[in-house]
Image (cartoon, rainbow, N blue to C red; front, side):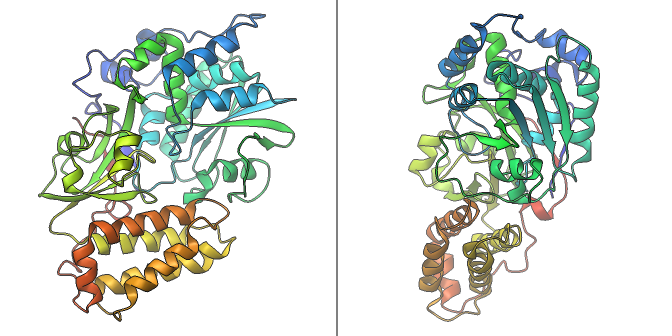
Length: 442
């Protein structure tokens, strides 16, 4: 699985003036992640004074005005979760989701290693806003570097005014679906790390009898910046419908694979070409392994949820996998589908039976070893799994596979007629097979 390294090449969007109110600005300034460097760059977080009952609604109002949305993949309005938990009865817990089960992503690993105190600031602020008495930071059991960085940061803050709420670090299993919020809460509550059926997300998750807020690491780091510098500062970057900066992992057929902080609304092509493609770009997988392919013709599209959706793409987990013209999109899609079939929770039919069948069809398709009815059979199977799982895992695979059949129509038709891919033996561009991702420059 891909990992990020942390070095002086990490940067923010150079088109954005200044970097004090950006996620990785502190790292750029000092190349250090310790508490002293963090405070020298940002100052102390604006935690509430005892008895200031007006502080929680003020913070919620600032988050609402900022337009901050979740950076874990769902783009859910952050203030909605805060207000939902603040109104829940009984004791409460804040969970920091640093699992990053998406193999093509390294943004959360980079953030936890470069700016752990910014994430912890956001968690403490969120805890104070909702009245939580416990914070749990979850890092996958195989991600030792990120976990060590968080443990050091927690130890530095212990006994100071920066730690009004107790923080624990937990190590759930590092599987793809284990980072889904209901799976994470299930594991923390002593159950399996498997997603649960949630027809109504208007009710908060619970650990024991504690109402629980789950936020992605990047979301909480942004919350800390909004609390410090105000919603206007956050909105000064990005576009009205998608304000702020965001972390994007760019990988695949590029010279400088890595994590980039860019303003929302920057063109897809500008981000991709900043990582220096190794050849002419044929397509880009947006959003990660549960995302969607878009063709090179869409590179002028602004990187934001609305514009990407209009061309069939998604922001998702903040991932762009670049495919060069001398590669086969059907082959890469088959590899992703096979991986995703193996990462299911194994608890419902669409994943247990449907995803392996989809992966088999795609694998045979790119090798040209199928009958002429494979495309119709694939569509029937994708329809059978889409929207019918306990979670959205099969939906992501269906979306990704359908986008491949749409973007690589000519290749799919050629393979379906018995012509194998000319690039069948080419090494995969997918990060699950290429080792470490290095944080790069724009």
